[in-house]
Image 1 (cartoon, rainbow, N blue to C red):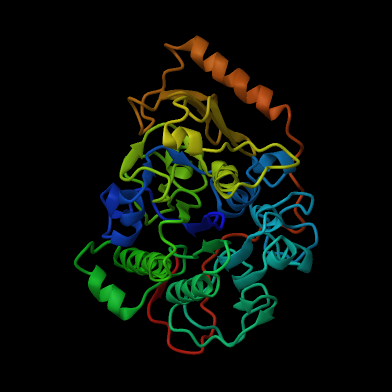
Image 2: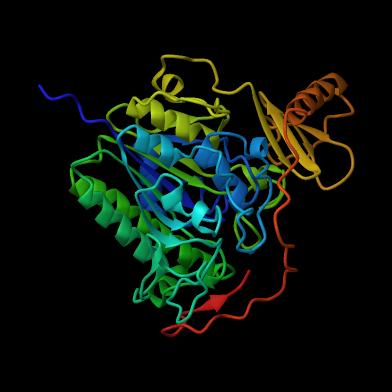
Length: 432
Protein backbone atom coordinates (compact mmCIF):
# COMPACT_ATOMS: atom_id res chain seq x y z
CA UNK A 1 0.00 0.00 0.00
CA UNK A 2 1.13 3.52 -0.71
CA UNK A 3 2.08 5.58 2.36
CA UNK A 4 -0.57 8.14 3.34
CA UNK A 5 -0.16 11.53 1.72
CA UNK A 6 1.27 14.15 4.02
CA UNK A 7 -1.07 17.09 4.62
CA UNK A 8 -0.85 20.27 2.63
CA UNK A 9 -0.37 23.45 4.66
CA UNK A 10 -2.17 26.69 3.74
CA UNK A 11 -1.47 29.80 5.82
CA UNK A 12 -3.73 32.77 5.06
CA UNK A 13 -2.82 36.15 6.52
CA UNK A 14 -5.13 39.15 6.39
CA UNK A 15 -3.80 42.66 6.93
CA UNK A 16 -4.93 45.26 9.48
CA UNK A 17 -8.35 43.74 10.15
CA UNK A 18 -9.94 44.50 13.51
CA UNK A 19 -10.64 41.70 15.98
CA UNK A 20 -14.41 42.21 15.60
CA UNK A 21 -14.46 42.89 11.85
CA UNK A 22 -15.57 39.30 11.07
CA UNK A 23 -18.99 37.85 11.77
CA UNK A 24 -17.63 35.05 14.00
CA UNK A 25 -16.87 37.91 16.44
CA UNK A 26 -19.99 39.90 15.63
CA UNK A 27 -18.78 41.97 12.66
CA UNK A 28 -19.37 42.04 8.91
CA UNK A 29 -20.77 38.89 7.24
CA UNK A 30 -17.76 36.66 6.50
CA UNK A 31 -19.15 33.15 5.98
CA UNK A 32 -16.03 31.73 4.32
CA UNK A 33 -13.68 32.85 7.09
CA UNK A 34 -16.23 31.71 9.67
CA UNK A 35 -16.34 28.28 8.02
CA UNK A 36 -12.71 27.68 9.03
CA UNK A 37 -13.75 28.14 12.64
CA UNK A 38 -16.89 26.03 12.22
CA UNK A 39 -14.88 23.21 10.66
CA UNK A 40 -11.98 23.49 13.06
CA UNK A 41 -10.79 25.64 15.94
CA UNK A 42 -11.20 29.28 16.92
CA UNK A 43 -8.68 30.74 19.36
CA UNK A 44 -10.26 33.53 21.39
CA UNK A 45 -6.86 34.55 22.79
CA UNK A 46 -4.79 34.22 19.63
CA UNK A 47 -1.86 36.61 19.39
CA UNK A 48 0.80 37.76 16.98
CA UNK A 49 4.33 38.52 18.13
CA UNK A 50 4.34 42.12 16.86
CA UNK A 51 1.97 45.06 16.76
CA UNK A 52 2.87 46.10 13.18
CA UNK A 53 3.27 44.30 9.88
CA UNK A 54 6.88 43.33 9.17
CA UNK A 55 7.95 42.17 12.66
CA UNK A 56 4.89 39.95 12.91
CA UNK A 57 5.71 38.34 9.55
CA UNK A 58 9.33 37.83 10.61
CA UNK A 59 8.11 35.95 13.68
CA UNK A 60 5.61 33.87 11.74
CA UNK A 61 8.22 32.97 9.11
CA UNK A 62 10.75 31.77 11.68
CA UNK A 63 8.71 30.49 14.63
CA UNK A 64 10.92 32.71 16.83
CA UNK A 65 10.44 35.99 18.57
CA UNK A 66 11.67 38.45 15.98
CA UNK A 67 13.41 40.38 18.76
CA UNK A 68 15.88 37.48 19.00
CA UNK A 69 17.38 38.58 15.69
CA UNK A 70 16.73 42.31 15.95
CA UNK A 71 13.72 42.58 13.59
CA UNK A 72 11.78 44.59 16.13
CA UNK A 73 10.21 47.35 14.03
CA UNK A 74 9.10 48.00 10.46
CA UNK A 75 12.08 48.97 8.35
CA UNK A 76 12.02 52.22 6.33
CA UNK A 77 10.95 52.06 2.66
CA UNK A 78 14.59 51.97 1.56
CA UNK A 79 16.08 49.34 -0.77
CA UNK A 80 19.05 48.17 1.26
CA UNK A 81 20.89 44.88 1.87
CA UNK A 82 20.49 45.63 5.57
CA UNK A 83 16.71 46.05 5.61
CA UNK A 84 14.92 42.74 5.77
CA UNK A 85 14.51 39.41 7.57
CA UNK A 86 18.13 38.47 8.45
CA UNK A 87 19.56 35.93 6.04
CA UNK A 88 20.85 33.77 8.89
CA UNK A 89 17.29 32.87 9.89
CA UNK A 90 15.74 29.73 8.41
CA UNK A 91 12.24 30.39 7.17
CA UNK A 92 9.00 28.43 7.14
CA UNK A 93 9.57 27.79 3.43
CA UNK A 94 13.19 26.69 3.95
CA UNK A 95 12.03 24.01 6.36
CA UNK A 96 9.02 22.84 4.35
CA UNK A 97 11.03 22.62 1.13
CA UNK A 98 13.76 20.63 2.88
CA UNK A 99 10.99 18.25 3.91
CA UNK A 100 9.92 17.66 0.33
CA UNK A 101 7.12 20.21 0.03
CA UNK A 102 6.49 22.56 -2.86
CA UNK A 103 6.56 26.09 -1.43
CA UNK A 104 4.46 28.95 -2.81
CA UNK A 105 4.17 32.58 -1.65
CA UNK A 106 1.36 34.84 -2.83
CA UNK A 107 0.65 38.47 -2.00
CA UNK A 108 2.37 40.88 0.36
CA UNK A 109 5.98 40.10 1.35
CA UNK A 110 7.31 43.04 3.43
CA UNK A 111 10.44 41.17 4.56
CA UNK A 112 13.01 42.95 2.39
CA UNK A 113 13.38 44.44 -1.10
CA UNK A 114 16.82 43.36 -2.37
CA UNK A 115 17.47 40.10 -4.23
CA UNK A 116 18.81 38.35 -1.14
CA UNK A 117 15.56 38.99 0.74
CA UNK A 118 13.27 38.00 -2.13
CA UNK A 119 10.89 35.07 -1.43
CA UNK A 120 12.76 32.94 -4.00
CA UNK A 121 15.91 33.49 -1.93
CA UNK A 122 14.12 32.53 1.29
CA UNK A 123 12.91 29.04 0.48
CA UNK A 124 9.94 29.60 -1.82
CA UNK A 125 9.75 27.83 -5.19
CA UNK A 126 7.39 30.41 -6.65
CA UNK A 127 6.10 33.89 -5.85
CA UNK A 128 3.24 36.00 -7.15
CA UNK A 129 2.82 39.27 -5.33
CA UNK A 130 4.62 42.45 -4.34
CA UNK A 131 7.48 43.25 -1.98
CA UNK A 132 6.27 46.40 -0.24
CA UNK A 133 3.99 46.69 2.79
CA UNK A 134 0.98 48.17 1.01
CA UNK A 135 -0.15 49.06 -2.49
CA UNK A 136 -3.14 49.90 -4.65
CA UNK A 137 -5.89 47.32 -5.11
CA UNK A 138 -6.25 48.34 -8.75
CA UNK A 139 -3.67 48.20 -11.56
CA UNK A 140 -0.78 50.65 -11.62
CA UNK A 141 0.80 51.98 -14.81
CA UNK A 142 4.38 52.55 -13.68
CA UNK A 143 4.85 51.14 -10.18
CA UNK A 144 8.30 51.20 -8.56
CA UNK A 145 10.03 47.79 -8.43
CA UNK A 146 9.11 47.28 -4.78
CA UNK A 147 5.43 47.83 -5.51
CA UNK A 148 5.08 46.10 -8.87
CA UNK A 149 3.14 42.86 -9.19
CA UNK A 150 5.77 40.17 -9.71
CA UNK A 151 5.72 36.66 -11.11
CA UNK A 152 8.73 35.22 -9.33
CA UNK A 153 11.25 38.06 -9.89
CA UNK A 154 9.73 39.64 -13.01
CA UNK A 155 7.05 42.36 -13.22
CA UNK A 156 3.87 41.31 -15.00
CA UNK A 157 1.33 43.49 -16.82
CA UNK A 158 -1.31 44.59 -14.35
CA UNK A 159 -4.48 43.55 -16.12
CA UNK A 160 -6.53 42.38 -13.11
CA UNK A 161 -9.66 44.08 -11.79
CA UNK A 162 -9.08 43.93 -8.03
CA UNK A 163 -6.01 42.76 -6.13
CA UNK A 164 -7.82 40.66 -3.50
CA UNK A 165 -9.62 38.66 -6.17
CA UNK A 166 -6.42 38.34 -8.22
CA UNK A 167 -4.40 36.90 -5.34
CA UNK A 168 -7.19 34.44 -4.56
CA UNK A 169 -7.40 33.40 -8.21
CA UNK A 170 -3.66 32.75 -8.26
CA UNK A 171 -3.87 30.74 -5.03
CA UNK A 172 -6.62 28.57 -6.50
CA UNK A 173 -4.54 27.98 -9.65
CA UNK A 174 -1.51 27.00 -7.57
CA UNK A 175 -3.62 24.55 -5.55
CA UNK A 176 -4.86 22.90 -8.74
CA UNK A 177 -1.36 22.63 -10.21
CA UNK A 178 0.03 21.21 -6.95
CA UNK A 179 -2.64 18.64 -6.14
CA UNK A 180 -0.34 15.67 -6.84
CA UNK A 181 2.42 16.80 -4.44
CA UNK A 182 2.26 18.09 -0.86
CA UNK A 183 2.56 21.87 -0.81
CA UNK A 184 2.98 24.79 1.57
CA UNK A 185 0.96 27.77 0.36
CA UNK A 186 1.43 31.15 2.06
CA UNK A 187 -1.23 33.67 1.02
CA UNK A 188 -0.69 37.14 2.47
CA UNK A 189 -3.55 39.38 1.38
CA UNK A 190 -3.01 43.13 1.55
CA UNK A 191 -6.71 43.33 2.42
CA UNK A 192 -7.85 45.18 4.38
CA UNK A 193 -4.86 47.52 4.71
CA UNK A 194 -5.13 51.07 3.40
CA UNK A 195 -5.64 52.56 0.84
CA UNK A 196 -9.38 52.03 1.16
CA UNK A 197 -10.42 50.90 -2.30
CA UNK A 198 -13.38 48.69 -3.09
CA UNK A 199 -15.29 47.36 -6.07
CA UNK A 200 -18.60 49.12 -6.76
CA UNK A 201 -20.54 45.87 -6.29
CA UNK A 202 -18.97 45.32 -2.87
CA UNK A 203 -19.65 48.92 -1.89
CA UNK A 204 -23.28 48.45 -2.82
CA UNK A 205 -23.50 45.29 -0.68
CA UNK A 206 -21.82 47.08 2.21
CA UNK A 207 -23.91 50.23 2.30
CA UNK A 208 -26.60 48.66 4.43
CA UNK A 209 -24.11 47.22 6.91
CA UNK A 210 -22.62 50.37 8.41
CA UNK A 211 -22.75 53.94 7.10
CA UNK A 212 -19.58 54.90 8.95
CA UNK A 213 -17.38 52.09 7.63
CA UNK A 214 -18.74 51.30 4.18
CA UNK A 215 -15.33 51.00 2.47
CA UNK A 216 -13.86 48.80 5.21
CA UNK A 217 -16.95 46.61 5.08
CA UNK A 218 -16.72 46.31 1.29
CA UNK A 219 -13.04 45.39 1.43
CA UNK A 220 -13.80 42.80 4.12
CA UNK A 221 -16.51 41.24 1.95
CA UNK A 222 -13.92 40.93 -0.85
CA UNK A 223 -11.41 39.37 1.56
CA UNK A 224 -13.97 36.78 2.61
CA UNK A 225 -14.73 36.04 -1.05
CA UNK A 226 -11.00 35.52 -1.63
CA UNK A 227 -10.75 33.09 1.29
CA UNK A 228 -13.78 31.27 -0.12
CA UNK A 229 -12.04 30.93 -3.47
CA UNK A 230 -9.09 29.23 -1.76
CA UNK A 231 -11.28 26.90 0.31
CA UNK A 232 -13.36 26.00 -2.75
CA UNK A 233 -10.19 25.12 -4.67
CA UNK A 234 -9.18 22.71 -1.91
CA UNK A 235 -12.60 21.07 -2.04
CA UNK A 236 -12.76 20.90 -5.84
CA UNK A 237 -9.36 19.20 -5.99
CA UNK A 238 -10.23 16.72 -3.26
CA UNK A 239 -7.71 18.19 -0.80
CA UNK A 240 -9.87 19.78 1.90
CA UNK A 241 -9.73 16.92 4.43
CA UNK A 242 -5.97 16.54 4.18
CA UNK A 243 -5.01 20.21 4.35
CA UNK A 244 -4.09 22.15 7.47
CA UNK A 245 -5.55 25.64 6.96
CA UNK A 246 -4.57 28.51 9.25
CA UNK A 247 -6.12 31.97 9.14
CA UNK A 248 -4.59 34.81 11.14
CA UNK A 249 -4.46 38.60 10.98
CA UNK A 250 -1.08 40.34 11.17
CA UNK A 251 -1.79 42.84 13.98
CA UNK A 252 -4.64 44.65 15.64
CA UNK A 253 -6.88 46.88 13.60
CA UNK A 254 -5.96 50.57 13.10
CA UNK A 255 -8.41 53.46 13.21
CA UNK A 256 -11.48 52.68 11.14
CA UNK A 257 -11.53 49.02 12.19
CA UNK A 258 -13.40 47.36 15.03
CA UNK A 259 -11.35 45.80 17.82
CA UNK A 260 -14.49 45.28 19.86
CA UNK A 261 -13.97 45.57 23.57
CA UNK A 262 -10.19 45.35 23.29
CA UNK A 263 -8.20 48.39 24.34
CA UNK A 264 -5.89 50.07 21.85
CA UNK A 265 -5.17 49.37 18.20
CA UNK A 266 -2.38 48.57 15.74
CA UNK A 267 0.99 49.81 16.94
CA UNK A 268 0.23 49.38 20.66
CA UNK A 269 0.93 46.69 23.26
CA UNK A 270 -2.69 46.74 24.42
CA UNK A 271 -4.84 43.76 23.46
CA UNK A 272 -6.22 45.72 20.51
CA UNK A 273 -2.72 45.83 19.00
CA UNK A 274 -1.67 42.19 19.39
CA UNK A 275 -4.75 39.95 19.85
CA UNK A 276 -6.10 38.88 16.46
CA UNK A 277 -8.58 36.57 14.74
CA UNK A 278 -6.83 33.17 14.70
CA UNK A 279 -8.34 30.00 13.21
CA UNK A 280 -7.11 26.51 12.35
CA UNK A 281 -8.74 23.65 10.42
CA UNK A 282 -7.60 20.13 9.52
CA UNK A 283 -10.68 17.92 9.10
CA UNK A 284 -8.71 14.66 9.09
CA UNK A 285 -7.11 15.34 12.47
CA UNK A 286 -8.64 18.21 14.43
CA UNK A 287 -12.05 18.51 16.12
CA UNK A 288 -14.76 20.64 14.55
CA UNK A 289 -16.22 23.77 16.08
CA UNK A 290 -13.96 23.89 19.12
CA UNK A 291 -13.32 27.22 20.86
CA UNK A 292 -9.99 27.48 22.69
CA UNK A 293 -9.42 30.20 25.30
CA UNK A 294 -5.83 29.34 26.28
CA UNK A 295 -3.33 31.80 24.77
CA UNK A 296 -1.58 30.84 21.54
CA UNK A 297 0.64 32.89 19.25
CA UNK A 298 1.44 32.99 15.54
CA UNK A 299 4.92 31.65 16.37
CA UNK A 300 3.16 28.31 16.94
CA UNK A 301 2.09 27.94 13.31
CA UNK A 302 5.48 26.81 11.98
CA UNK A 303 6.24 24.10 14.57
CA UNK A 304 2.64 22.87 14.31
CA UNK A 305 2.90 22.62 10.51
CA UNK A 306 6.23 20.77 10.73
CA UNK A 307 4.74 18.26 13.15
CA UNK A 308 1.72 17.75 10.90
CA UNK A 309 4.04 17.19 7.93
CA UNK A 310 6.31 14.81 9.83
CA UNK A 311 9.33 17.10 9.39
CA UNK A 312 11.87 17.12 12.20
CA UNK A 313 12.70 20.65 13.39
CA UNK A 314 16.44 21.10 13.13
CA UNK A 315 18.77 23.89 14.20
CA UNK A 316 17.72 26.88 16.28
CA UNK A 317 14.99 26.24 18.83
CA UNK A 318 11.54 27.71 18.26
CA UNK A 319 9.71 30.02 20.63
CA UNK A 320 6.47 28.70 19.18
CA UNK A 321 5.23 25.23 20.10
CA UNK A 322 3.57 22.36 18.29
CA UNK A 323 -0.13 22.76 19.11
CA UNK A 324 -1.21 19.35 17.83
CA UNK A 325 -0.98 17.41 21.16
CA UNK A 326 -2.94 20.15 22.92
CA UNK A 327 -5.58 20.40 20.18
CA UNK A 328 -6.12 16.64 19.87
CA UNK A 329 -6.32 16.12 23.65
CA UNK A 330 -3.08 14.15 23.93
CA UNK A 331 -1.73 16.88 26.23
CA UNK A 332 -4.12 18.96 28.31
CA UNK A 333 -1.52 21.43 29.57
CA UNK A 334 -1.88 24.96 28.11
CA UNK A 335 0.63 25.53 25.29
CA UNK A 336 2.36 28.55 26.89
CA UNK A 337 3.27 29.54 30.43
CA UNK A 338 4.48 32.97 29.33
CA UNK A 339 4.21 35.15 26.22
CA UNK A 340 6.31 38.24 25.50
CA UNK A 341 6.12 41.36 23.34
CA UNK A 342 8.46 44.31 22.88
CA UNK A 343 8.89 47.21 20.50
CA UNK A 344 11.26 49.91 21.65
CA UNK A 345 10.33 51.12 25.14
CA UNK A 346 6.90 49.49 24.96
CA UNK A 347 6.51 45.92 26.14
CA UNK A 348 4.08 43.39 27.57
CA UNK A 349 4.20 39.98 29.18
CA UNK A 350 1.32 37.55 29.77
CA UNK A 351 1.34 34.65 32.24
CA UNK A 352 -1.94 32.80 32.72
CA UNK A 353 -4.65 35.43 32.63
CA UNK A 354 -2.38 38.16 34.00
CA UNK A 355 -0.80 40.71 31.68
CA UNK A 356 1.71 43.38 32.61
CA UNK A 357 2.02 46.11 29.97
CA UNK A 358 4.15 49.20 29.63
CA UNK A 359 2.53 51.55 27.15
CA UNK A 360 4.23 54.59 25.65
CA UNK A 361 5.52 55.99 28.93
CA UNK A 362 5.25 55.58 32.67
CA UNK A 363 5.13 52.55 34.90
CA UNK A 364 3.79 49.14 33.83
CA UNK A 365 0.14 48.31 34.51
CA UNK A 366 -1.28 44.94 35.51
CA UNK A 367 -4.55 43.46 34.26
CA UNK A 368 -6.43 40.22 34.73
CA UNK A 369 -7.66 39.47 31.22
CA UNK A 370 -10.05 36.77 32.40
CA UNK A 371 -12.13 39.41 34.13
CA UNK A 372 -11.04 42.52 32.22
CA UNK A 373 -10.26 41.89 28.55
CA UNK A 374 -10.60 45.63 27.93
CA UNK A 375 -7.66 46.37 30.28
CA UNK A 376 -9.57 49.01 32.19
CA UNK A 377 -8.63 48.25 35.82
CA UNK A 378 -4.95 48.49 36.77
CA UNK A 379 -4.21 45.98 39.56
CA UNK A 380 -0.62 46.99 40.33
CA UNK A 381 -1.68 48.70 43.57
CA UNK A 382 -3.41 45.61 44.94
CA UNK A 383 -1.23 42.85 43.47
CA UNK A 384 2.36 44.01 43.94
CA UNK A 385 3.80 40.49 44.01
CA UNK A 386 2.17 39.48 40.72
CA UNK A 387 3.35 42.68 39.06
CA UNK A 388 6.89 42.12 40.32
CA UNK A 389 6.88 38.50 39.14
CA UNK A 390 5.75 39.42 35.63
CA UNK A 391 8.21 42.29 35.48
CA UNK A 392 10.98 39.86 36.40
CA UNK A 393 9.86 37.51 33.62
CA UNK A 394 10.05 40.36 31.11
CA UNK A 395 13.44 41.57 32.31
CA UNK A 396 14.92 38.06 32.20
CA UNK A 397 13.65 37.60 28.64
CA UNK A 398 14.78 41.05 27.49
CA UNK A 399 18.27 40.41 28.86
CA UNK A 400 18.71 37.62 26.28
CA UNK A 401 17.91 39.84 23.29
CA UNK A 402 20.34 41.65 20.98
CA UNK A 403 20.02 45.31 20.12
CA UNK A 404 17.39 45.94 17.44
CA UNK A 405 18.75 46.19 13.91
CA UNK A 406 19.66 49.74 12.91
CA UNK A 407 17.71 49.87 9.66
CA UNK A 408 19.26 51.90 6.87
CA UNK A 409 17.40 55.14 6.17
CA UNK A 410 15.00 57.06 8.33
CA UNK A 411 11.26 56.67 8.58
CA UNK A 412 9.53 59.18 6.39
CA UNK A 413 7.06 61.42 8.25
CA UNK A 414 3.44 60.41 7.94
CA UNK A 415 1.59 62.53 5.43
CA UNK A 416 -1.37 62.11 3.10
CA UNK A 417 -0.53 59.92 0.13
CA UNK A 418 -1.28 60.93 -3.43
CA UNK A 419 -2.76 58.08 -5.47
CA UNK A 420 -0.61 56.79 -8.32
CA UNK A 421 -1.84 56.89 -11.85
CA UNK A 422 -3.56 53.65 -12.63
CA UNK A 423 -4.22 51.67 -15.75
CA UNK A 424 -7.94 52.07 -15.17
CA UNK A 425 -10.29 54.10 -12.99
CA UNK A 426 -9.86 53.83 -9.25
CA UNK A 427 -13.13 52.35 -8.03
CA UNK A 428 -13.13 54.26 -4.75
CA UNK A 429 -10.30 55.47 -2.58
CA UNK A 430 -9.69 57.04 0.79
CA UNK A 431 -6.52 56.67 2.81
CA UNK A 432 -6.75 55.85 6.53
